[in-house]
Length: 340
Picture 1 (cartoon, rainbow, N blue to C red):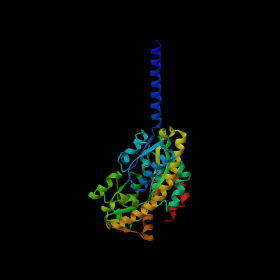
Picture 2 (cartoon, one colour):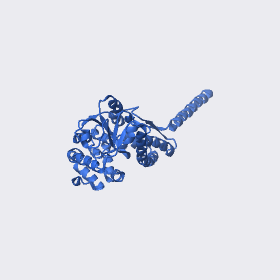
Picture 3 (spheres, rainbow, N blue to C red):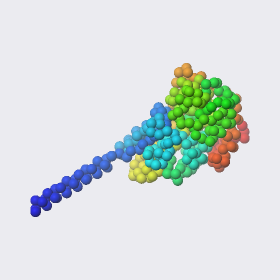
Picture 4 (cartoon, rainbow, N blue to C red):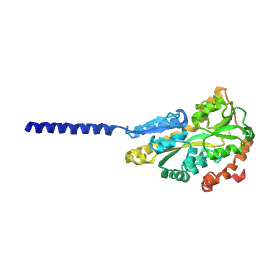
């Protein structure tokens, strides 16, 4: 009887020890954050995502592992937001145009042509009250906004020279899915063609579309310079991203880990915005060095002609975006459409 009791005690003790061992192993498993995006790894967003993964591991001392999936390897443009909401991925950095289809149309203020003249004006909006209020609008949809990341100001490309608004008349121009960008192209008498970013190179190559608009880093890293003969540095619009997470996942993190990740994001945002201009400048030189695309820098008079052609988009989009949010941005940037 005594032997059986000892045996039972030993078995029980072993089971408890095994249970603790399993628990210890499980406790050591890192929290995995799948970070999906649709651009190349060597773009400003791609590099910033990798930087965040590194900083997250450092600051949490290995408690968090960020897995970055670049270049639409997990999800394309139209799939990734739903994937985030259902928890298939935890983090995204979609372009700001993607929030209109989600129902938060106020984000489309960033798509308005020539609403920002420079990064200083832009950052006054993204880091200020306007930016905070926009991020707060995502929470009822199960999304937490963490930061705004820059890419850059956009240039038009085509296989014919682009010096005036008339040069885009009748051309099939690829855009992101955005009502504002559709209206922009119509204001230029161009034909807007919405399609996923991953499909643009082939569409340009085969003539499905005639041209597009992109920051230089996207243009170069997607090899569009191989299939576009002309690039015009119009700087007519801004392309940036909002880094977002699944709110339920984020709120469920231990408070200390969440704080460490917030610091990692703060450092990554500075890195992202610092590298954006640098990367675009470098890639412009690479496009020029390729000899495949003629780069044109419009004169002040030509840029003014584009501004005058496109400013009507602001008024037309008031009913969609909201006059209040547009005027809030005007108050920060000191933009006055009546003076054009």
